[in-house]
Image 1 (tube, helix red, strand yellow):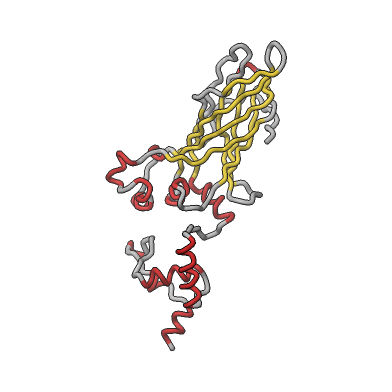
Image 2: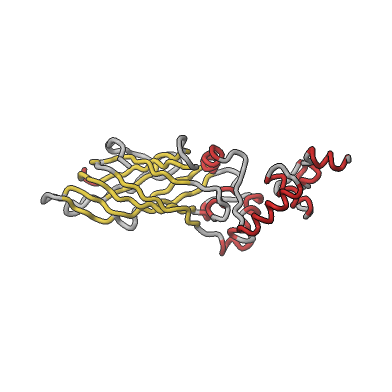
Length: 269
């Protein structure tokens, strides 16, 4: 991915994140890089849900950078935000009962992304595409899906190699410092917007082959029209209730609220 046109030095931090740690002076012509997040938005034209992180890179002393092989690890700093009662209940599977969160609440690995940054001098901004999944077997997805709103503290840890014009001529290469990182407070609504763009009002559940075959057979025997109706029939038979409180704070039974026309015709007959 090519770097954006160099923009020169920029002061201050973006509203959702922190400004870059100022890069130290270049040592022996080796560039020191600093990183910051300027913005995050859902990528409009993508085959899968994707968030575009605008990452600013700044090289010390105006050293000419030929390219950067950049690796970024994204982590969710789950301990650095508050949770309401509904969110604590929804996060039970990840962190356990909320009375044990003093020991069990921890940061979560989100993903690793690698990009190539083109040549620049001074400062440039590049787009870091972060693919999102609705696979609820992944802890980071379950975490985002459990949140009703607010912001998610994201930590970005940078590594890789910098290729630069060596003072004596030729091409030099140096590792990115292990302490290079940035932060961003990502609104949960931004992640949800990326998911809803591709999977509106729906979710995904992965099953093993045997369970899926049995579910197919159950649906076919009862001539059910959709997978949602199939799962509802199983939940109703098990006496399950909906996950969200209904009016007045009590929990509704979906069997009482969501009778399909087919069920009503069968009962009338």
